[in-house]
Length: 236
Image (cartoon, rainbow, N blue to C red):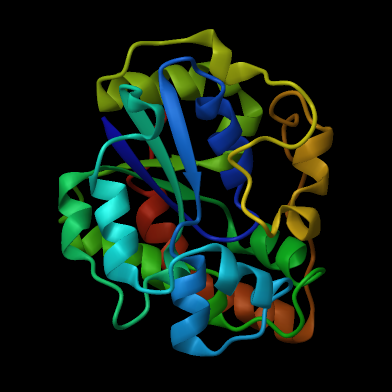
């Protein structure tokens, strides 16, 4: 089974990758289109030069790898994808051959976290529009799960996710060893400090953050896209 998990930044996506990479029957890949995205957009990201060297910049080569044998010849592959990486010139037809999972999070939480590490983010940077586009491409033939629900009750929601995609339950997804993992992308030192300190999913989230100015406007612009997928989410 090849599972493509479509997220945006600051969405619990790395913790989810660690969870499934912790299973003995899974391998994982971390944001394989990152270099292709940077090469096509010219965007300046932390460790961008290193990313461009570390990964293929040709998206066709990335697709070939994703559709080929799973690393280690393991039965299952967890693909952690950033939806905003699917820019013009990056193929999308291969997605229909994957088991697709959409990992969503309220835009107020995403913007509050992302803007603390990325200056002046725009709507195109946080993945909500692209998630909706990909969901439409699949005609809704995908599973949607909300990061807030996972943090509230990880076992219940991950059991529901496994059942929804036809995967046997394995409690190994609930805990992992602290520290970096071999699957980490080269950008991990900038983004993964919190998840490297973790040994499982963080507890339930509190109230939504209060945003002001451009941050509030960005979260409001993303909200309709989030609400569309939220209406289709797993409820356990």
